Image (cartoon, rainbow, N blue to C red; front, side, top):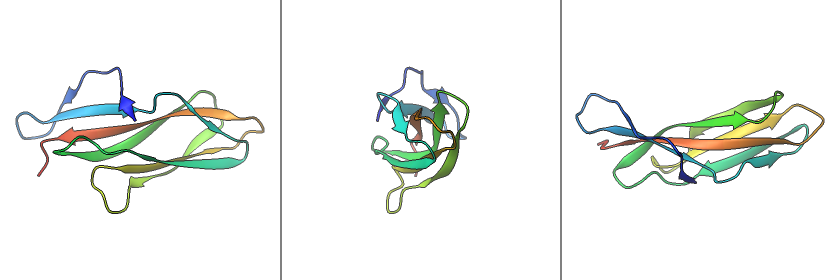
Length: 101
């Protein structure tokens, strides 16, 4: 997972917290009538994963699963299902919140 071309978004109640977005460097292929699951790598030290997101290139590909990865507050598991008869491509991303206790 690579840093996304987005500025950190400020948020949270504590001063200095920031949301940081990370995306896979290239879209991932999702074969027809299949789901693809990825585990998005760790948020930076001192941060926790708050959510994952996906951006399909065309209609017919849907979010199938999105949850924290077992055993790590800094990783996220996300899956997409392609309901079409052609291969789809999806960009997956991870949102981390810094300075979380």
